[in-house]
Image (cartoon, rainbow, N blue to C red; front, side, top):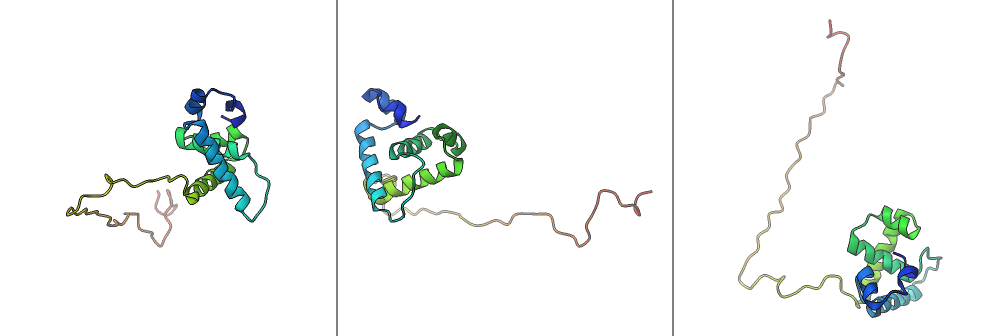
Length: 142
């Protein structure tokens, strides 16, 4: 859903449609605006920062394909993928929003060893033969 269609919603409806509260959304747009001003290479963005954030949030929340996101926002699917990657990297680099926060529950207790078997197993494939085989040879069929 594009930002233009949800900006006039009530606070609760905005949170239900986007997944975060309006003040956090505005703070994230400010972070993206600072990163946009700090970049050296200039170009025309295909979407506004608000729509880029909406696209990314809908990707995270709904697990839609980039093809469908591109149709919704009027961009090509590869451009939608680039927008999501750019927004993720800018939010992660800002330090404002940690995408993954390790907790004390994630760490194993002291004295406990964790063993992980990550050995590789060879894939069994048919061996290549020197002579190509065909379905029917004139010399072998009678």
